[in-house]
Image (cartoon, rainbow, N blue to C red; front, side, top):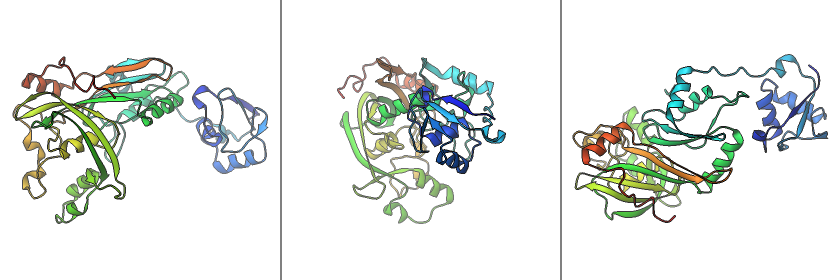
Length: 351
């Protein structure tokens, strides 16, 4: 292999040199990269650099002769036609920078123990002309349906991620909850932490599935407690069938794991169909089956949808996308006579 010169792409803006090599020449070992950088064989715009040097779009990287195996490009991931079509069927909005999906109930966003099919893996079936795959910007629980934002490039993912971190993104969720919360509009401000607290551990021995569920569940924590993180949600009742259930519009200010589900349980009105969060006390033997509270005629599925996402588009203007109700929630809305066109108090509330 002879000396080669690569141009840094717009998508590689701000990337460290070592990570740039990992992306462009993944077979090159870190020890060999350190050697050719240390000896000045790698140059950026003619200048010596370090592996931690940040690159800018348009710069030229000189790469010395490498062994054929080190210069080999990675094999392109296989495109699964069924995944490609499934993703296409989910698209609510698309432009040259991003895709907004309507994620269905039951499909995980990322892989995990025992999870083999998920959005992140399916995205490999939507490569661009350079073979680059899209990137996740945020997450939804497996059983939460609705708006999911995908970036087409690494740089766009970083720009959108910063918008989420700076809380410029406005997210609105709809949920059906047990009973009718009072007051009709409110603010939930709590500290959340993962796993069991002392009171849960005193409840006695658990079976393995119960222990795993307890570790995965978020619990109310005290300020200053280890791993406790502040969480804030605004909610408003849109409609109700008292005393059975209420349709809530929920706007999370923070983005903690299971935040809306934990908050709904904390105010005594868990989301209908939620298998993990229930309102029964710890000593109630029926707590093992919180789905017993699901009203007759309603599917035993989580009734939570990421309804709307509004945020500034990195290239200018606003992105404003609304997802339809998933089939099981649409059926429940019909059952209770809820009209999706009804005015949502949260949507018109000031930030």
